Image (cartoon, helix red, strand yellow):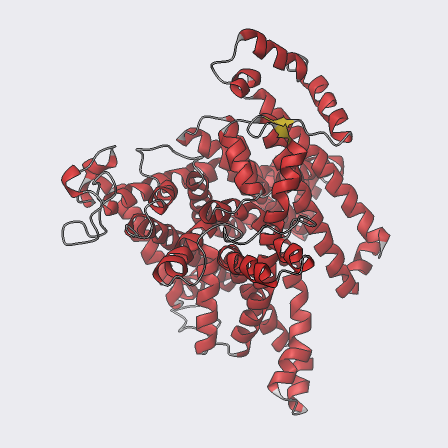
Length: 290
Length: 340
């Protein structure tokens, strides 16, 4: 991993970063996995063999079929093609991850920046509130919130967002605390720059590598969390194809119809693995750049 | 014990616990719908609903309700579960030990497997054992506990039926008299060795499923820490003196590399409390998590608040224990705290 790969042309940091990323076969594998999954999800209507199986019914003549020529991954108890449903499950998971992160990240980042730069009682108050959310296992808090709400896609995203932002607040808080001591911040303060300017124009750009790396890893982990919730029956309700509930549903027919839960389970593993590999690759690339 | 180090941590944990109780209390009361009506179901009469509302102070303002809740809590009363129709504390006392036993066994597996795995990876850096170790670590991190549960159950429960698929004991095994609620301890106390073996047999699959994510994290961190330590001059000197690689690994590299790992062990133990929800469902484990899911699905207010609080408390206690343990092993952390 640390073995210096052939440096591709010049000493520009950007090309060094690119070389570090593409020099690691695992990062490239991750990128390939992510690309395939994103393409499949976006073009699911055209790329899946039975897009009509996304609804409650499939082909009743072909229920519980083991993997074969027609149904590559087999069919479920309603005669629906598992591959099709897994692809639509991916689509749903990606939408959830993007929505959750596009709300949780800005909220967490702003809290972290303000608390880390302002210090004093603002710091204390904001970080104690953050600690409250970090004082319960994330899954338990999300479950409890879901418990009081209707199990819909919207509420699922809400519950996960509510427990996700504190992690960004913590991360950016630590980065900001370190950056606030740097000369360039002092220089900006000396020339009378506004707080907003210092936070968003001076400090924030230095947080981007940490934020981007964490967001990439987190796409995988939000998917993992969402599937955990729906595995427990607290997520999206049937007939919407959802990887977690497919595993839970299939587990009832073990071991005879093993494919019902094994394929969706492996599908979750692959997507989380893909985003993890890309995230790790990005981290190394940013380190090589600096 | 260094109180200057420990007390602020206990204080911060207590603040967090009070905050969590307010948060979960507010969520439980603010959510749409009449909690009394939800609790009693559609068939209850208006009078029954009104009685329950009065009993639980549901018509009072939120702070008043919270105050009543705190007063009851100080008496050790967390309310009544409508699902089991017993005091929530009784339910927790019954179900919590099973979960703690599962989590503790998983922690042991995580430490016993994860640390050596990471150390071996670092020792054989770039060679086959390293690649294998890192693959296992990565798979552990990227796979939700329930996926491991389902796969382990399929392979070692059905295809090769070596382990039981669910529960804590065989039906033929008598339940040991409750002393601690930990079957591993209770069976030993009652001197029933075959029951002990049976309890252990039932624990292995769920505990492994729960431990795998932690194994991945600890192995990964131990590996990178040891690689860092291997680059230090004193390790180079030790190898220049001709010390054997094994001695260098165990005596010089492992110990300093272990300290940062210990910090995340705490986080991992805490994560296991959450993941236990998933594993208990797969293996039909009669613990607090399974109880938690039941009461959440039934919108059993007091029971949900009680379960979340008790899990938060366990989580915070684990984190304090780890912090204190780290400070005992590594005096530098204690000293740097004192200065600031």
